[in-house]
Image 1 (cartoon, one colour):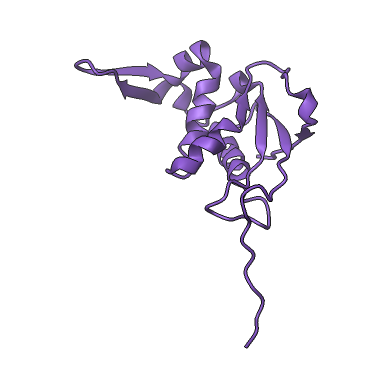
Image 2 (image 1 turned 30 degrees about the vertical axis):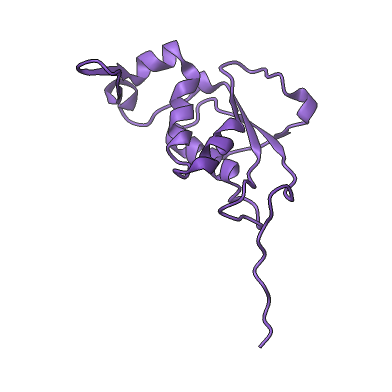
Length: 146
């Protein structure tokens, strides 16, 4: 019986698009999941798990994101420096110091845990302001309604 064959995308076959997303007053987790889907390429009908078929995303105003509930005060990021003890930092302080790292970490943790994820994360461009230097790529505006 000759049925239809499943299409598998090959590397270099996918034409990359550039998207611009405005993060003003968007909830972090919901925005991060939408951006992670675009970086992985799951918004395309020709998605293939082992091929880099996602698009590049430019996120503007990433310092104006919102958290639901009391997470802005209660949520803490902690990490190990190599010395005794752990370092901790609240979301409020991290947004003041490095406004792009909050959204970058949320997106990074939603990507697959493999070597392809580093290439996907390299296609993510975060800017705390409303301007970016990527006009030559002719990015299209992507409305994320959350």
